[in-house]
Amino acid sequence: MSNRPKELDSKVLTIQDLELEARKRLTDVVGGTTHPDCSLRDNELAYSRYKLRPRVLRDVDGVDASTTIFGTKVSFPFGFAPAAAHRLAHPDGELATSRAAAKNNIPMCLSSWSSSSIEEVIAQGGQNPYAMQISFFRDVSITKRIIERAEAAGYKALFVSVDLPVLGHRLNESRNNFAFPDHMRFPVLAESLEMGLDDTGSRVFDPSLRWDKTIPWLKQNTKLEIWLKRVCAPGDVQLAIDYKLNGVIISNHGGRQLDGVPATLDTLRACSPVAKGKIPLAIDGGIRCGADVFKAIALGAKMCFVGRIPVWGLAYNGERGVDLAIKIIKEEFLRTMMFTGCKALSDISEDHLVVLEPNGRLSRL
Ligand SMILES: Cc1cc2nc3c(=O)[nH]c(=O)nc-3n(C[C@H](O)[C@H](O)[C@H](O)COP(=O)(O)O)c2cc1C
Image (cartoon, rainbow, N blue to C red; front, side, top):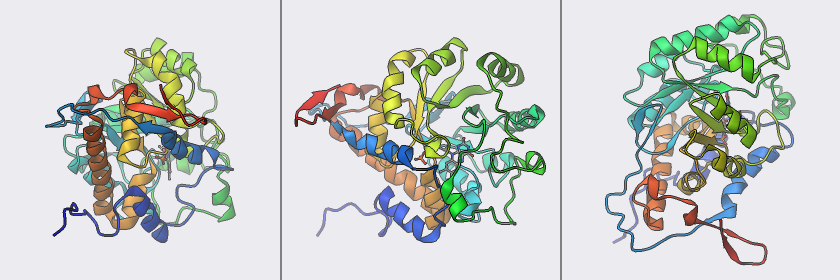
């Protein structure tokens, strides 16, 4: 007799297992970063600096992790960040990712570099909300058409990537001579790719974005919620509030653009006091388990997004691999809530975290 829970998959019990299995199947280049990989490592390590501080005897019967995002109820504060070309990991690509997201009622943001179309991806979904990631092109009519298609298809929000004046120098892609396979299609970006993407993207991307020009343009050209992606400074959170944006995603692009910026969890902690009660903050970067989601919520995030995890899920087992990844994280998150004495997300606070000081003392935040 055993009282062990029945595992969802005999080989993959955690996201670390999933990454290992995925790496056997993926080229090393997928998910690569800019030299010397500090931000990717820091994003992950930041979570281990905070320890959980459980409280007891808090009736957690009927624990509920549900929340809302883009005006829609979702099952827990976890969703998919935009990541290019899911078909590099599995032939079903973003369609499989979307089906798994819908099945688990979590939000998904589609990359402009998607290898499936805006319309097909949302058509796989149910009641879960979709966001569209956009970049600004020198020919702004390309950006405008992507927005129009996303609106017409029923997307609820735009994630505006504001860290793309040029492409990051991804050394591992250069070293491995990476190129997208000839059969790979980018239906969202077909037009801009015809302009020809050079080594820095500088022919294509518009490096002249400004708060007082770009944000008014966006507001004139869309009714969708506007969330800024890759905000790393409290001053920019304040500007997002001043410009009445709908939300901010604390992100460093998973280390793929500018390396050497702080871990996103540390940035979140610096930005939360500015945002509190004024604008919702989401976070991405380095989230690898349910306890990480808990820590980000405790430090002020409303929602956690992940970029690499769905790619690993796809590489492991297509839609079922992505579904497995969501279920692992959700189960871990619910357990963390119960073990720490939290029945609803509103119960989670900084009070549930401590930091181990170098002198061996545990400090409250
Ligand atoms: C393979 C890959 C492709 C990505 N493509 C995009 C993209 O097209 N647009 C974008 O805004 N961010 C992109 N990102 C960044 C993610 O949206 C997200 O910020 C990052 O992956 C979060 O870190 P994590 O992978 O540790 O979860 C990509 C990330 C990866 C790993």
